[in-house]
Image (cartoon, rainbow, N blue to C red; front, side, top):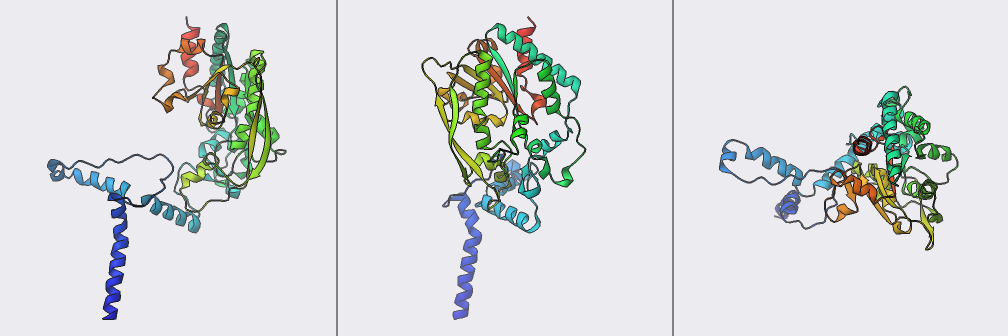
Length: 377
């Protein structure tokens, strides 16, 4: 009798455990952390007899259940952790696991080796267009500046795994860096600046498990950008300095964005980073320009810094020359739908930023649009 009771109890426990995902799916009782990365919501299909008969409803229902069963993120993280810990494998095509645990996006490696080089002639054509736009903007009292942001593979080529190495050829960064200088386009080369500081910087400018410059590395570029703007417009702007620089092992999601995409249970070895406080110094005579920044995702760190009003009278972030922030936080606003002439008239400085891997598409249509509007009159 006792043995039978144990069997019954075990059966109940096992049945309850098996039923938990279904219960969680229809009656959520536990908070589950979502998976990182791009996900597509699978809508529950509407039951239609005709679809059932034609076997069109069943595949849709199966796909819905596959994407929405209870505790799915937990099961996926367990699987990913087992795969990584036991076999050194990771379930992501957008990550390359490098030496010493450095994570890369594979296209940054391709860019470093010149595998995506668009050629000198096309770079010259793009730079000439940039120069023409710059001159036309100046006629309208608007300054243009270009910022080349660093790439992790360029900064840490020594950690690229051997299987990803190839012959080092001329790349887009080298070409743009050459021709922007030759055509006298105002620009900052942070890729070169980061490389020159690599052996002397006390804190990492790139995080081990992230793809962008570290929050610390991105933050300390602010004074260089401000000084460059100041020289560009010939007016005294806010003085930016830093204090309370402190080493830490606490990371924001921006510093571990690639690690997050691996969706593991346990954190990787992240090394250390630093926190820093910004000190702004200005007065009633300080010039605060209105700025549009057209950039890839590297600008999020700078755009998220506090007290931007201490430097700018207005700052807009045209994300890939598409979404306009902070306007997008309130309602959908897209750069290509805005009146370009009005935007130029209300803007003192247009700053176009691109990292080494996105330089080939710099401006993402902005320079072509501005060239057609301003230079073909």
